[in-house]
Length: 134
Image 1 (cartoon, rainbow, N blue to C red):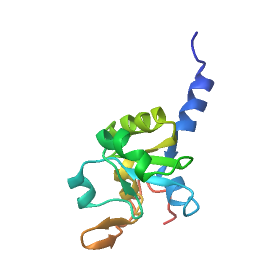
Image 2: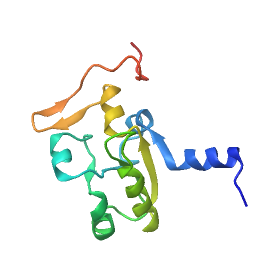
Image 3: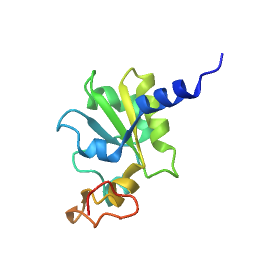
Image 4: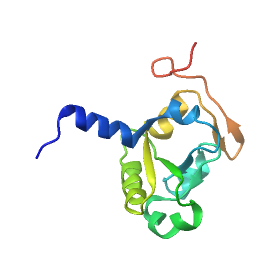
């Protein structure tokens, strides 16, 4: 039995979240999880995110993320499926999970803050992709 286009896109939207929706979410309503390797996390990540590399999710999730949490996972960007693999791992553990489309690349391109070894930094939004007003 095949899925209609409307059913497919409805299901897809239930499993994804835009970077601006994450940025605008009520504080504490989402547990944002960076699923990249340690060196990537150390280079820069979303402030307040939790770091669990994808391969470690089955072993660490229950100790780090309370049951019933709304989890949002991200990785590098649209050219990487790491967050898709991470979302699957969380879903298989029974978490409510969404994949942040665009990853940290589009977080940064929208001019949102990134925590780095030098502190929290923000760049000018990329006018071609940003949802921020000029």
